[in-house]
Structure formats: structure tokens, C-alpha cells
Image (cartoon, rainbow, N blue to C red; front, side, top):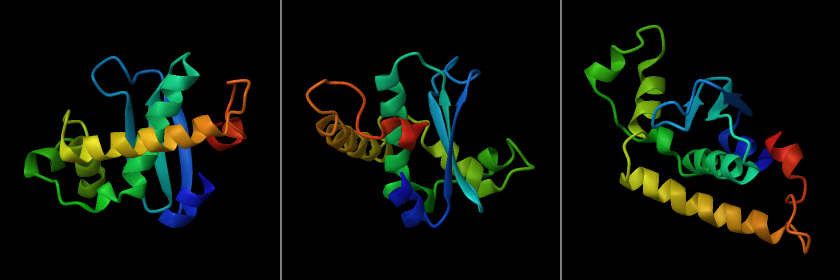
Length: 133
């Protein structure tokens, strides 16, 4: 995660949000001036939590916040937040979009790398709790 933060030139903040997951959204990534914020559904499954976080990190690595996705309707949803912040979060809510599929493929590759670092016990990847909290 440190390398993603350096790549993005900001700090990363990852938080479980109990109110997420009651609909179709299991996580949101918000790219702000001073931080990258990943909000994810609370889950008892560490594997599911890992996959959610890796998916959002993949969006960061692939620069999906730099792609034009907005509309006036989206901009009016939360007028106190910057339009680009809203557009970026909402654009990724559409299932099976090219952006979502790319992020999922990269998340799977990242998960494979973490899996390889777990060792023979099949337990936690090396330093996973330090990385993901």
C-alpha cells in the first residue's frame, strides 16, 4: 500500500462503514486533495475484505479517477462535494463496465501475489495486517 500511496502522491485511508453493503455498493474510493479514501462494507470475512480493498486499489493504480465520466445530474446529487469526486465514485457503480472489469482483473492479480506470500500455513499474507489494518 505504501507504493500505491507514493505512486498517487498522497496518503491512503481505509475504513469500514457499517451502512455500506445494504444496497449494491460494497466499497467506494474517493480521491481527494490530501488523501485517497476507501470506504468499504464491514465484513467478518478477511478474504472478502481483502478483495474489496484490492479492487479499489486497482482503480487507483489504473488511474480511473482521471477518466471523464460526469453528468449534470450526478453533479447535483451532493452539491457540497466537488463534482469530480462524485462522478468518480458513481461511475464505478455500473456493473460490468470496462472500468470495473479492468479493476477486477488487476485486483485478482494482486490477490494472487498476496496469496503467494502467505506461506505454507495458508494464513495471513506477510504483513497484511500492517498494510490493510
